Image 1 (spheres, rainbow, N blue to C red):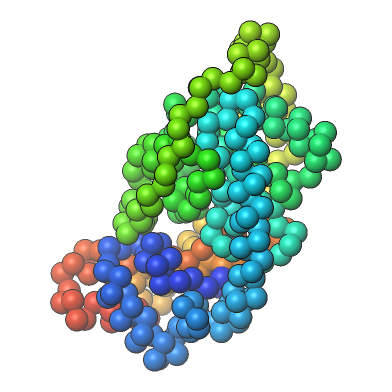
Image 2 (image 1 turned 135 degrees about the horizontal axis):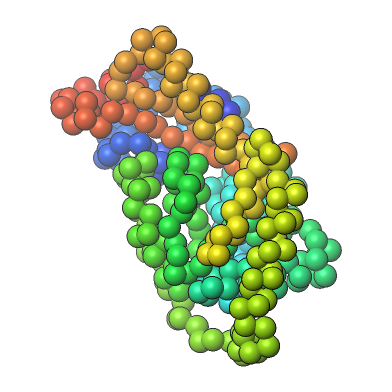
Length: 324
């Protein structure tokens, strides 16, 4: 099933956050206790998984994730200093504490000034090529969005997960705006809520931005978009890769795992139907990998029929949610 694709254990709070139906945290704890008693779920040191090996892997890489998170905050603060950058957020595997290798990238999601997505990306890429020797290990900027155009074009479980798991490094309120612009994610994660985050004071236009606008204006924006679009077209895998080159969005995932994840989930649902498992459980899955080749990590999901749960006596809900 879906979670056999990965090897990552989650905490009770994380399971609740990513649950596919509305449920009380205390009720979820009771459900997990019963599953642990049956040997269907394993627990250790506050982590839960479908396989014991996932717990071992989680404990092995806790320290590494904490170390990489400290690095990400320093790098994110640096990115925030670049012209036209308005918000920096940690994404990918590290945002979900799923790094399982020292070689994994640190991925950033960036909000930019209006109509300056491609100019901001150009300055960041030039810095990376000159001073970081084009290394993506600590400086992977695969998604940039205009702060005035925050609606995601792709709407599925994968993109919803990436959005709600963003960790603010430098934020002026853009993350709250991003959540508000994409209310559809609530249908996937009804228990998810945006954590209170001290908002950095809205910055004034930098001198470097004034100079750039005076010297180049929109010409540099148009030129950079054209050049990056050609590059992405030439280097994106035709079957699994994905890129977006709109005036307000730059997304570049040359070897994305997204399609394989969604296909895996669909196959699992079809198998459930073939086995006549028409219970309230739609799926129980643990995404828990940080595949070094695709460099994308994934998380856990629970799915259940909200209608059936609402009509069912509370004391019996746990049997419905986890019936196989």
